[in-house]
Image (cartoon, rainbow, N blue to C red; front, side, top):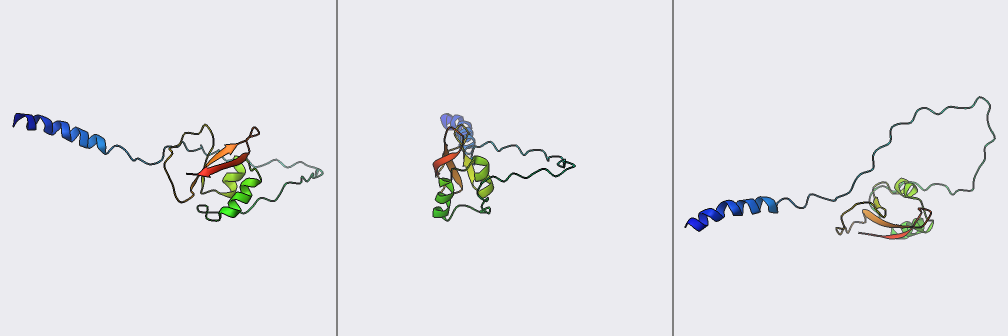
Length: 126
């Protein structure tokens, strides 16, 4: 009888510790930048130089459902900033960024592979 009384507090401690897991994904959110000041306009209009950059695609809200369009976007080798602009609701995980490796079946988190210039060359959803 005395053994069961001694084990009761020990069991309650283990029961409390067992509920400490499953707190959600471990990632460090990016700090939000401070709002920029109003741009200064030059007195005389300067000659505009146009570059041959493709038009930015419209943002796709929600998780990725059209994988063909997503693969076509990744084939353009976007920068991480362009990825976050095009897919604002998908968490982009770049190499070196802390994150859990839990399985997500809704295409809401993309683990990207980067080239030497920092452009996305591929990756996978997890």
